[in-house]
Image 1 (cartoon, rainbow, N blue to C red):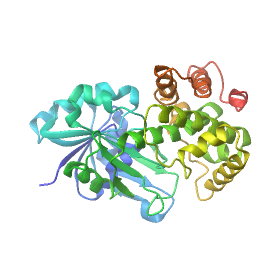
Image 2 (image 1 turned 120 degrees about the vertical axis):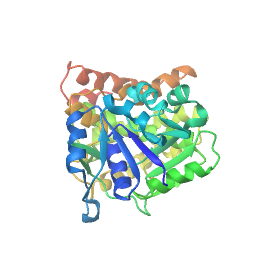
Image 3 (image 1 turned 180 degrees about the horizontal axis):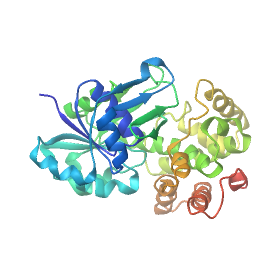
Image 4 (image 1 turned 45 degrees about the vertical axis):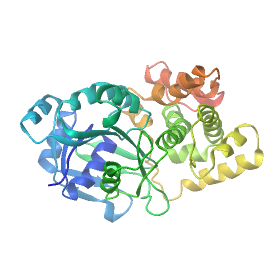
Length: 350
């Protein structure tokens, strides 16, 4: 008998990843607070789409609302719980899942930010693992419908990087890798924390910029102001991550030190990075926008404080500053709180 899998939070990432698992025949249960979404999944299945025909399919799936989670007590226990909610919902979501885990059951943080400690504080470090989803760019476009706006990673780019908090390679983390390899390219990493901070840098340099300006990913890569800003945001975040002792990975095709060099005025590196950014728009949907921009469009709370704000917080803890990231937090806060409209002018002077 296969593992019982729970997807806690059937948003863009959760529904997309779980949809592939369901199509493969895995025992998957989706949990989400949006009743209309849950009803659509149960009635019509999950409909996933992407840039190629092979990515477009519909699969039957089972979903329940938060109020029905307690009924799981009468069923087989959960072996693997993928936590896919927003960072600010991590604690209550993990608490909800905790009582339904099997004796060897564990959680996988499949989220944008660094939430493993929050999860471990509830279920214990022994039941906590993490997974980075890099360059997946998915969006929940309606009840039961998820769209991916970038090409599959395949052999060119490893999308999923699953790891144990202690860095050892275990049978259970290999099982997570196997499940995710049905979705796109996946690997087991012995450097979860370095991978985590590297992904945080990638999010910090792009998510909030799109959220504040209203520009999509392609438009941001074509605009000089936003390109230069993303370089400074990344360089600052890399500097903090290295000061914290993390072994950072390649970030958007460049080595960590390259971002710091560009931030510090290396004009040759800046030109190279800008060229790569412009070229990255080729083959990517103009509708593609990062999760924080999706949140602003849907008038939802963003993760700006868990991404750029986290960089600022960690910098302060070690006696450093992150003024560029702090300024972006202020800009996004203004939009999120209705104090300003999305505009390039909001980030022009950062």
